[in-house]
Image (cartoon, rainbow, N blue to C red):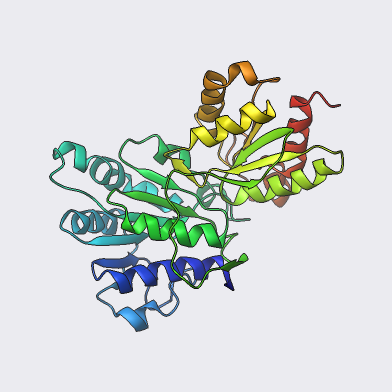
Length: 326
């Protein structure tokens, strides 16, 4: 085991897969000469050369399309977006080509491609650089969507994503790249579509994913002071979702709060709340509650950012509501 940063886990996953399979390559803005906008590809150009670590123009639609074509012809591209906010101009290639090609070709073409980069709020970057699109991509048949919350998960999930024969959206966060954690030196993969129970508890289930789960740990520690025992589930993958792990937990605790950074309408939390109440209704002692960002564009103001995003305080309040605690 060694303690590494989140960005190092991403780099190690990509490098290990590129050493294992010569068909894997990395392409995106500043991934080569600059070592990555967030230094997640540090040193990869020196090791693999410009044919496999490729700098692109500021043209997401263009290089996303190149990646889709390469994947259809036997390669395994990793396409890095500097932020998933910039993926909006590449949506036609992601949604209408990568996600649908296998079905439209009757299985003649697969698209084993990973689109990766940061999602959501990263501080004072303004509304156009602060959106969450996990639920957008999860709404698209043909895509898998992965949102890790820590370096260990990130490495294992990214390696599995690169080996997957389907297009995968792999979403990170600028605010997690410096996070540190012990990660095994030996190879490991984590299966897509399997949630992880990060903390066992008996009083209430809190479901979350991505960087916002940090606020859930804070809330759980605060609730523990009142002898409230929280079970924390990290989805890790939001398409497919591991409904069974969540539902079995709720059947045990009888209460659930879902914490998600995205806006509330048509969110992952909305879908989960429906599935829980469909499959565990008779076990619920209170309605399922959601803690999402406010339904407004994220401001540049630190005070407004704090008020808009989910946080430990709002999560504690939601848990006490489902427990009928004042």
